Length: 480
Ligand SMILES: Cc1ncc(COP(=O)(O)O)c(C=O)c1O
Image 1 (cartoon, rainbow, N blue to C red):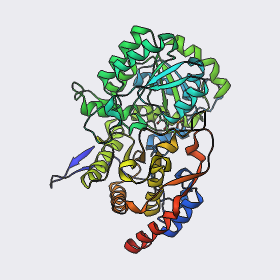
Image 2: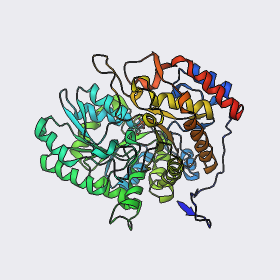
Image 3: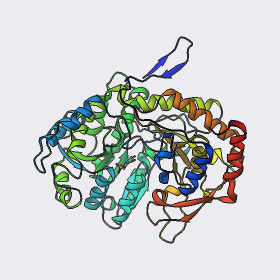
Image 4: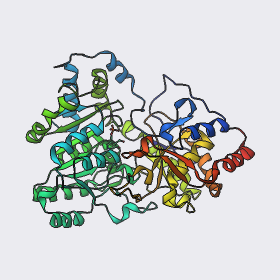
């Protein structure tokens, strides 16, 4: 939650206390420069020994609760029929309202199975916005993603509260154009990641549900970030202020045909799941589970993680858990916005996002401004962020660059991990970056994998801009 101080200032306040800690180290700028060069200007390739604040992602790096740690110890490790799995199934039914569940090793494994079973070559998958791994699996199945977002979604500075909405009229037009038999399924992603963690409204979801029902098209919900979306519906949507996050989560789930999630985010473990009330859809996926993931009662996850997931599933709808990152992000974004730094507004879930095209207008998209900004942020702060722009798009079949709609540098807030002083430090270094933005230039690939190149690709700084840039930092702020 956020709390108002007697000065009138509002700050996010942690509704938990820290009882186990992990030491971190801030290395001097010279070391950071060497580390990013060795990592090929790709923050994924940094080693954690060189990282001060790891804000790469909120995935698999959240703080687990005391009850989750206790659950890790008390599990039924049976290969088949484990009672720990049935504890999770009970939690899924209680919290999501969904009767059938299968685990998978992480969110993209759910995407793989769903794409494999429901998408055929030539099919179309309309979505409010793509996610990297979703798109890869849909395309590997021979289908194509069709993004149907509201015009407002791509405006990084906005007051539109639900930029994750799908445009219903555009969906109707697409069904007419391609024919309903060509639509494998419609996918709605909660707290749309690549739009800057932006929620959709319940009203919009209901409208999309009506269209899918009318045309008998399957509606798939990617609920990896469901709780943040529910928390923001509660804060922003008329008629939901008096509902609990738990009630909103259940209502969202009741509107989809198939639900999947990466459990690495809201449930604070390492795993994922697919859940539904539709027996027929479930039975189509189930035979493939042991082929790609594992037996039905573990699905590629360790039983310990499933035990912790059962607890995390119940805890994730607590507003202090669902809202902890949202409130930190609100503070983070507001402070940067006040000093004129181009950030994605309104603030959403998942991360504070810098608009790299506005931050570095002198760096063309072909020179990857969001990647350059992520590298520069690391050099001046030891903070690891992630590029979410053109590097995160793969080339098309002809090998041509596909420019992203948005060039975002994402500074993620893992749940219950960082404190307000960490955020203050990040704000300070981002302000320094903004003042010195002209010293940052672009990047070019030196090694480029063909699929999901952002994970393993290596780049170098154009014109060796990192030299003058790090010298300017040292002159003003010294080694740290
Ligand atoms: C919206 C969304 N869907 C799917 C995934 C993939 O999940 P995982 O990383 O567990 O494979 C992610 C991961 O960040 C995500 O944000």
